Image (cartoon, rainbow, N blue to C red; front, side, top):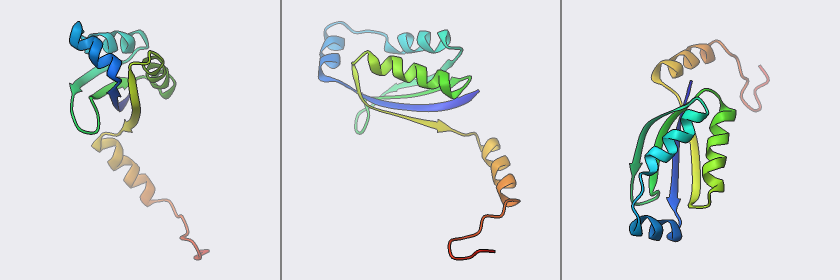
Amino acid sequence: MALYLFQASFTNTALTAMVKAPQDRPAVFSKLLEKLGGKLHSFYYAFGGSDVVVIFEMPNETDALTAIMAVGAAGHLTNLRTTQLFTSEDTMAAMAKAGSMIVPAPNNPS
């Protein structure tokens, strides 16, 4: 299964609602992921560039996109950003495989 990093910011309306009636948003997100065959690894609240930082696992890109679209469609988040993550092992395997590939540089037809 693939790992993803999700970052977003709350709208002012969402922040107002959560301050008035605190909610367990990680539980809500976790249930959504589980319905799609995924798993929540970590959910953090933050300040700075993002209000929410999440790491989750999904069986494929389509299900990951479905989860993000569902969350985005709810309208309580802005600046949604999703990044696929790769383990060190996967990256090392890709490095080894890339080392056997020949890609000519621009202006170097060899």
